[in-house]
Image: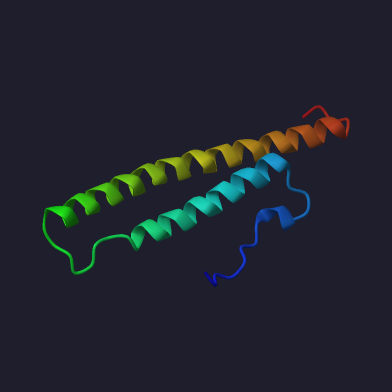
Length: 93
């Protein structure tokens, strides 16, 4: 494979490990969704193609739910990181 290297958010300064992990998971899930979209049968008909299409659509549907959950978790981590930074700085949060 000759794919270009992936630039993960770990290279951005000031991000917590939790946020880095979540952003990396979102990025990898996006890659997986793109690969699933290319898995639809092209020029293939019949029950096998229908079964494949149904399976791929089901996986994409679940991946979208996971994506929403990861984005909600990322928003929570952003808030918690801010609260932790305020606590460490002596603030009341």
